[in-house]
Image (cartoon, rainbow over all chains, first blue to last red; front, side, top):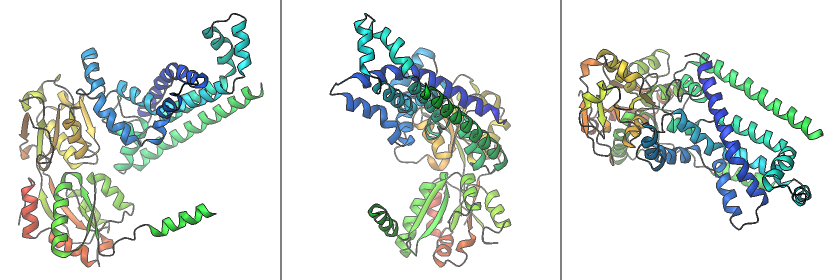
Length: 221
Length: 246
């Protein structure tokens, strides 16, 4: 097994997950930042739950929900002919749930710290709500977006427990780098485990340094 | 300061290891048999047995890295022999406690043979051949019987034989190559087909046990080790679907 196959798979998984979370997470974060609804704490709790719950709880429910007999899985089988468990698509679904708080929370924080008068001025000048969001709120919340993107990307890269439960360790499909490392350690192939782990350590360091550098640069503006 | 004091008290108050308990590492396929053996042993001697389950390869790696086990019930002969060689196990004490069998099991289709040869019949679950002897036997059988080409592309790998069965039992895989001893697991959904794979098509599943070095002078561990070849133990092991040789 080469080192880069599982690494590349992990990067793809993290990329798709982050892209989807950016689309789903932004409206959730915006709603949470603006609303005074009584439901807000409940929604906040649901979003934050993957931080608290062990991966085994998520893995267990996903195994049942995404399997060919499950509520989502059976629907997916009808649609595409194959089940969601043991597939790359299934891992993307699992990762979106698993990494949701890491995308939403930084964005929500950024939106909340936005001076409300900016938005109100845009509205009085006739900008639509969507317009005001894209021209005023989004550019001013760039730091929140960057943190959300980097954190959900990094968190998905480090995902292990959920994948172990719903992945099935298939080369090129679900054997992501964390699973490949586990496999090598378990079979006492420490040389390969070292190579992959070092690759991941280096990668994580570069990604985080980049984030902090970008954050500082944008913060000074 | 107060918080750390509370923490310290909690640390000190963690249950001290019962002096007279035996720690046993158990290959997953033997987990339920071992539970029953432990209960019987406790009833006879009053000695507690603490069981840790996992794939044979994983437990082996843990033992090499200093895991505090007294007895290792493996699912092969190779790793117990290696532990003896490297001085991790008491020399000359190793013996075969059970011989397992490989079974193809499915919930959904009635013809086991057709499931194997039909490339579109769905996922097949195996245990990871690198760490689980039952997975290794499964790959040997599939290759020697000419099914590997049809199966390799749709195989999913359980971390150990229990996860392999779980994949099939939850309906996530259509069929699985599991241990015969798992067939009488409680709450197992009804099988649509069960096929015991001819033992000539894989190198055997002889399972050996070793007394680990740290337990060389531990009387309780030795008693449990010897208990494994008593008539009472052989009866339990045989009832779980293993071949035993008195």
